[in-house]
Length: 438
Image 1 (tube, rainbow, N blue to C red):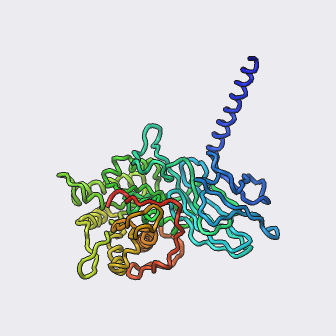
Image 2: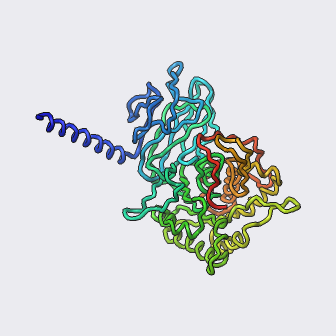
Image 3: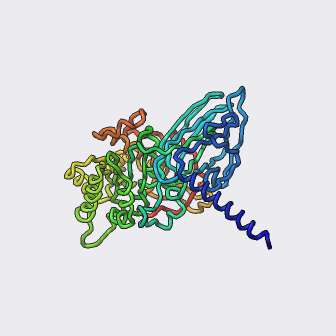
């Protein structure tokens, strides 16, 4: 019986230590991880190749890696032939991620962040070569201040974009020696507001341009994609997503606004392209300007629909024209993605255009027993081509943002990239469930 007070004190001390360490971790702004036994000290945490996520850091979702000993003092590293995840519990904000790459053999690395945002693609190292690369990841949470939060859809529960950690997915045949994650407060943040053609799609084979565009920016810009499938301008506001953006946006940031697909289905007496849609679009613009930030109107992507002559048909009614009109009246930069995607589809042609959309025969993916035939939602190749269209729209504008674009070859929607030139390593998760909206 005399042991009970001692036991109680020990348990109290243990809980105090755990809570104290957790609080200290939460307040940290720089996290350094080494997968190289020779790289010790200097604030690095040594991580074993099979260390499971423990609530603060580690390999996640049941994935592990293989530890490789470096040759001739070049340093150890981790690798895998399968996709793997590494997660770190961090507060909301923008983070600069720095990777030290290279190993005994040639390596090839593609990195996606959170819900399959493309950050780096096809980064190659030769045998024995070392390479350091970095990029910016935005981390967000549903909370808005102390009293409110975003009203997430059921499909968003468990989505990596909204959880309490920063998750990186590594694909192809990487060789990683070290990883550093540092919170940065000096980035321009490009916020995205939109629907399923913009959102970070979680599962293969679905994708949207918003999750591809981070790959085209240098450090200095963070992309915060708040789009969600099935939303209109009204439901985006009603679910407090615009409030969430306004709680974070600062002078010099941007808000890209693309809606229309779902708005056109609203049939109330005050709805329509030149009524509620126009009024709400102006609300987005005015609230952004009140914060000293820069609104950009993006017209809705065209649907895959062709006439008897093989030309793309407008299925969005007056909505693209209404967006153009608002942009002109408000003096806002316009990226006419509707016009560019119409050109793109015409260049593809009727049958080849299916290569950019979710058109797959049954059993292409695990558990997919029926064909997928969707003329609104894109696969990764199609989403990547659309992101290139948006990039060209930024280049053609007067936005200072364009100086942060990577120096890549220009893109002409009349001359799209061949599908077999695009390399997208499949992520582990797939779904046959069509995203909300159409």
